[in-house]
Length: 241
Image (cartoon, rainbow, N blue to C red):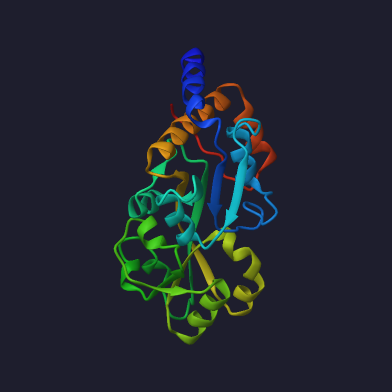
């Protein structure tokens, strides 16, 4: 198996080695920092050897970053759920590299915990951050109000403009005190795997194939296990290949 993967990597690298890899993504503190540090960028540097594939990092709003990759203006992006992959028509890594923990933020005087189930939650007045359609990620059909950020969501919840804010749990760390002061509660809804995304053109498909084979080799030789130990903020997947 290792010999087959190695041969495939040599074949694929012949197409890609002369070209830098442009990563376009939103900025998530600790994961994709503006200075090029963070767990996701560290993953890219592990999977794509820098002497062959130097990285060019660009930050953008999430939806715009995904569109840039779709149009071939960038090569690689992060944070896509299966719903995002289908919506934007991108190529996706074969294996997830992290998991989004999606929670419902709500006022307990307005919403009963029993109503915070996937079958019943579409009846609520939902909100989520722009480009983060967590209803789609949860596999439910529902309309939602796009909020600017978690702090804006808190204002809307208190004003009764929305009754439930769908969010990724780590995005709420920065507003933990505001949530507590406002008397808002959280309810776990689902853990959703996230993937790397690639352009749907020939170059992107070759890069995806190279990425997938490299990730398999890195799991086999133990380097991926070491990577997740160094980056405990990531939820290590249980790869099947």
